[in-house]
Length: 288
Length: 301
Image 1: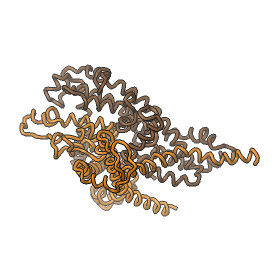
Image 2 (image 1 turned 60 degrees about the horizontal axis):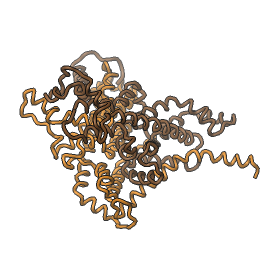
Image 3 (image 1 turned 135 degrees about the vertical axis):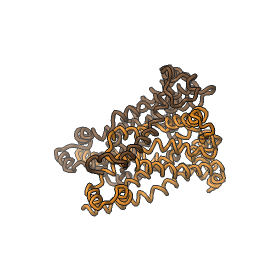
């Protein structure tokens, strides 16, 4: 809608009323998570979900980070955090490099048959992961990388390739082909044009891609569960173990603190990146 | 052949070589794996792949399996409600934010942040909020409404709706962001013309803007539908498929049979059914959109 901001009318009250109600619905779980994590278990047992904590304490956070039991061990979600970092860094850098290379090659060099490959790749984005999981487990086992850091990074690389390739292909498609031709005439080869000309121009789309990969890989549960192996379980898997496989009384304050800790990285990425995050959504969604 | 001609020939191969990771992914990880799963689904494999051939027997067993029937039934309810509610709420949020409101940046942040959270975290938070003993039901009862009941999460017949609620909370902001981007593309002249003709604003949105947003709607639908088929984490975190198997979804059924129950043939048959569902849903939309894009390209030329 365009034009100036309308004056105050009953309809405006309705607009603000609706938006306020919606905001409450969306923010309520965050509020509940935060307040619960600051309460003691005695206070939680009173069952006042929306009450502010009487005596806010960070004990639950400390416990969630370094003491709570996640399945076999009792070291909190700390280990999971570092596992997630070790998974997320290569699973962001490699897919972006490969995606940029694919996009560059598809946009400027256009080797014969490449478009067909690209078409199948984009269709592949719609294949449910469950179709590929068992064969990938067997392939990785045969290659000796199943249940390892390499194994999980390879899976992230495979499943993110359609999106990463698409992002860079569309980005490079908007670059005038004269630029590429001029570089060719100046004697630039395949790699030189890529590294010295195209990559430096790609910063905006690299940022968008990095935001998508970091949040996507960090929030992944399924692949981490199957492919990472017990020593590399990412934070989401450890969080779920902490909450859903422990016996005895459920420590909701610790659970909520662990949930916030697990969500912290993508939430911070989202809050800091703002418009870039949205750009990733729209760029990724507008396919073809 | 001289050395320089050889290097020139090698150089021409470089673009193909650069696409090797792409080719390997497409041929091995996508096509190869899908064909392998198809092959397994036609065998009598249990823990290990068997090389026999039993035709469609696994598919017959699958559709006789009550748990699979329930999972498919749940997928239908979950998919229809989740997509409809996310689209409706996302569209409404976008339209209301589009009314030149104050603090629209903050509102957008509040509506979209759940999308930055994992489905695991989403499921765990809502498990806590909807817990009848200490969550919403208890709060309303403490306020004095003693007979208030909201125990869907432990109710076999209603648990799937709680998963819808959590998923809608997570994904509506995404639809809003897509719709807002679409609304910004609406020509200012349309608003001016509508105002001159005295057409009410809501009417313009419903009769003019909504049809114009067709491609955005299709995009949102595809994104949400893909999420429906993949839905696994949120169920595991929120209910572990329970109570009993009441909130089972096909993706969870497949994972349980692949790893927990060592019945890879049945699981693969389920995966192929899932794949067929996705293709049936997505292919027509992609075709229509591709068709529209080609038409648009012709017009602008």
